[in-house]
Structures are given as structure tokens and as C-alpha cells.
Image 1 (tube, rainbow, N blue to C red):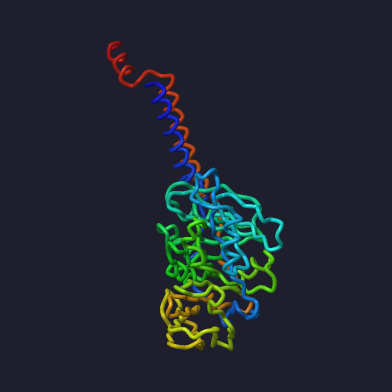
Image 2 (cartoon, rainbow, N blue to C red):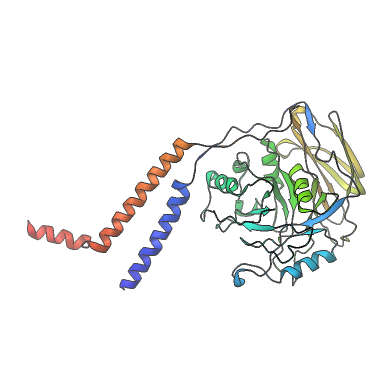
Length: 394
């Protein structure tokens, strides 16, 4: 019985530490009021594209790792062989908090890992880092928790992707209107499509570009294999070129439809911005083309065409195109958006030191009170015995 009480005390102390660490010791941030895209210039993510240099990529796939504790089957060799057979130029292994180096000697090797072990699956994909970061918060996270993690993950030269934000509401629209220090969003995932979350970030003036991934967990059964992908426009498959394309939006996401040959997925052939008018041309005619703007509003549609032109109005703030095909294939392009002549500047996020110190002081008091209670339980008399002894003394 004594051992059980000690175990319960240790477990309770661990839970209290986690709660206090997450909700009181975490830095507090000063978030600015979101400002939608504005300015006289339209940013064109495809201004430097070469239609002959599209490379198909998958950045999110799991193998067996951590002695089988995490959800993953097969090996890194299985992953790379499977994607190579489907004409992928870049294919990553992104195990939880582990960077696979099986193919690190290859010229196009891109280190990747999935970050996050919290209960709400608020996960991130980190590309281009050779060091795993462990900071995370176990319980349902506040916006301050999420910002602390993102600020911790973001490093010069890497790309941080918000994974499946709509899954279990891992990132809310309110979060996405405020958070900073990430580059892309995994809008296309077999578990969930997060276009509403993408539009929430874009509507708040956040320069966020699309990623599509299989989030493959079982390469042996091939379930999910080749169902989502990202195309990047690069002259070489070097990791530096791929990361630069993702950071600048020289890429697009694809949902691969039924019976779609993986070497014949529609590709973007041309994308121009002339003053306030955009024009896009695909390699194959789509059954429907939509133009989406501020707050996810559909601005225009066209049917049975391989191209579309649209004049972007200042109140549209941004415009992104989606090409849909009869077999279920969808191509989602990155947005054009208004910027000042000096270029896009992200809204800064600052730590509120006064609020941080206040919350940490409260958290320290809670931990101190808990330690005093533990000391009382270990060394003092039980409360009822103490009360009876005082009564008899009187």
C-alpha cells in the first residue's frame, strides 16, 4: 500500500509539473492585430519558374522507428524504392523526433523529421535541420504554447511546415491569424484537407505556401502511397534548391485522382502577372477552375479549360487557383497577394516579458505549495491524527 501511495504521489507530481510548465512557465507573447495583404504590387511566386523543371516530392513518410513504439512499417530503403518507382525526385523519411540518415550520402538527401508528441496532434514537419528539437507541450496547447514551439523550431536555412492543421483542430483559425515563424502548411494530407485553415492564415496576411504529402505510415501495404504530392520548380534536386522553392512558393500541391498515371499528373506550364491580372496555363484541360480570395471566398470559376485569367482587386487581398479534373485529381497553386513596393514583411511576434514573469511567478508559487504539501505528507502527521491530538490537548 505504501508503494502504491508513493507511485501515486510521483505520478501526481509529474502531471502537476507538466501542467504548470505548459500553462504558467511557457513564455507569453504579444500578438499584433492581423492585417490582410495590402499594397500596390502583386507577389508572383511563379515569376522565375521553368516549366521543364517541375520535380515531384513527398516530405512526410514514416518507417519503423523507436523499436516499433511509433506508427510506422517498413524501412527507409522501402520508402525510397517505392517513391522512386513513382517518379518522385525528392522523397523524405520523417519519423517522429528522429532524422533518418540511411541515404545521407546522396546529393539530393533532405533531412526531415516530424515534431510533436502532444495529445491533439499539433505537429510540425521540419525540413533541412540536422538536429532534433524536443520542446513540446503534452496537453491541448494555447496559442502561446504553439508560438513557443514554432519559434524554437525555426532556424536559418530550414523549412517549418504545419502538419495536417485541421486534424483534431490542431491549429485553429484564431491560432493561424496570429502565429509566426513557419513557412508552409500541409494543406493536402490523406487524413484531412486543410484549405479552410490555409485561407485563415492567408486572410490574416500570413505568407504561407502549400505542401501536399502522403503522411505514409505503412509502405508495405502501400496504403496512401502516391495519393498526395508537392511539385517544386528547381534546376537540381539539391536540398538548398528545394528548400528555397518551398520558402518562396515556387511549388504547388496535388491530390492524385483515381487511375491517374503518376508520370502524367497535370503540370503548370505558365503563370504570369501583368499589372493586376493573373493568367495560369496547365498542361491539361480541367473540368473546373476556381479562384479563391479573402476568407475563402470564391472569386471566379471556369469550366472545361486549361487556362484562366483573373483581375485581382484590392479587396480580394490574394488569389489562389485550384484546377479540378474528372478523375478526382486537383492541383492547388500558391497564392498571389498584394505587397508594398519594398516587398512582403511578416508581422513580428514579441515575447511579453512582464506577462511572462507574472505567469512564471504564479507557477513557481504553485510548485512551491505542492512541494510543501509533499513534505507534509512524507514527514508530518496525517491531518485527522493531528486534529485529534490537538483536541485531546485542549
